[in-house]
Amino acid sequence: MARAAKKKPVGKKKAPKKKRIKLHPIEWVRLWIKRVFLAILAFFALGIVGYAFINPPTTPHIIAEKLRLGWADHQWVDLEDVAPVMARSVVAAEDANFCQHWGFDMRAIRAAIDEGGARGASTLTQQVVKNAYLWHGRSWPRKALEAGITPFVELFWSKRRIVEVYLNIAEFDEGVFGVEAASRHYFGVGPENLTAVQAARLAALLPNPKERSAARPSPFVRKRAQSILDGAATIRADGRASCFED
Image 1 (cartoon, rainbow, N blue to C red):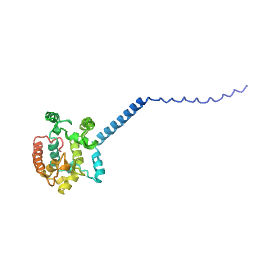
Image 2: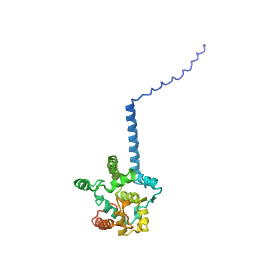
Image 3: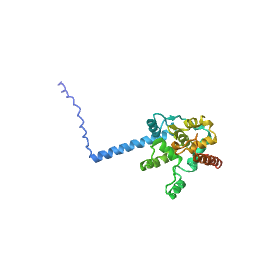
């Protein structure tokens, strides 16, 4: 019987090399712009959802001030460890209708337009977005980003969480951030022991803390603090503080 002819092993065919598609310079720029945009979108998306549960360790403004001054006083404190009147005071001072809107106070915006932009219309949520994610200073790019992020913060964060983060990252004096540092800096007490008058004076510093003092209040700060004191009592009585109080 004839031996069967040995079959030569068939070598594996080499896969053809994929040709690199050379992009036109304009297409290459568009591709990278798209990638950067998606990366920024992912960064903000993770930051927005993450900060709903994780306390922001710092902010762009705190970092900038720390680099400028060489120091920054900032310690986190849970809202349950802050005197309730402090939360009511900042809401009364900055955004009395906080519990009634979804991030934008249309009545305040219309009033600002009627007055030719002489008054601000930023809500507490918008200020949290600016402080937590963006840079300070007036510019259209920042305002556009602020307006784009604000609805998502309202969607993923509770109203109580917004107030808590605001109180912890707001600037109360040069290099002094958050109500924990501010209450000890000005009055030598913890935030849980703030009186109604002290809370109103701290809230009266906003939004110009570097030009005002709670320890040595000017006539303007005293007058504003009295107005905030009355406003805090009002929003407690009429239910406009219910969304962030236990």
